[in-house]
Image (cartoon, rainbow, N blue to C red; front, side, top):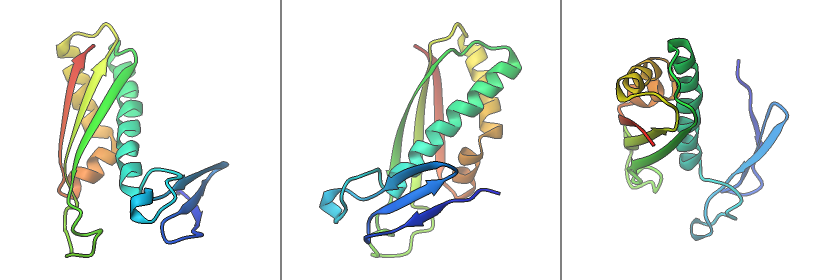
Length: 142
């Protein structure tokens, strides 16, 4: 069971507490926030990056592949019509492309094996895919 709590002092700011950690999710000044933290959608994208890293490291270890440290970049196509209340959107995160670069000694074939295993086990990638988001992940060596 995962647990989180938030105190929401304004329409845009949520002070989140998870375990013994506290952080803010907010909106930029241009959208009436105080810019104290990333937006909910940015936080979701960051969570996908973090999940990809931890699951990839576990998969690489299981496969005996040296992926070293990863650099992960994400580009997300986001349909804002839902958050602006213009209309209901079934798939707000329409497409996400992750570029994963490894500084380990793995060759491309080994990176492809790690990528395939990571896709099988990363819960956030599965969540996005099940919601209808097109998720593309490109792995390469630095």
